[in-house]
Length: 64
Image (cartoon, rainbow, N blue to C red; front, side):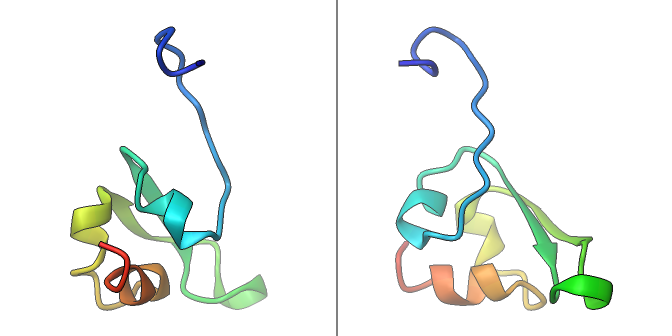
C-alpha cells in the first residue's frame, strides 16, 4: 500500500470508522460556511474526544 511504501496519505473523510484509524486529525469547524473553516483540533483520535468544541470528537467517543 501507499503507507507501507512510506508515502503520506491525506484523506478528507466524514466516516468515523475511517477517522478513528488516522495517525493525525485536523478538524475544521465549528460549522460550515462563514461559521466554519477554523482549526478546532489537531492531533490524534484519542485526544480529539477531549476537545469540547469538536463535533467530530463528540461523536468519535462512541467508536474508540
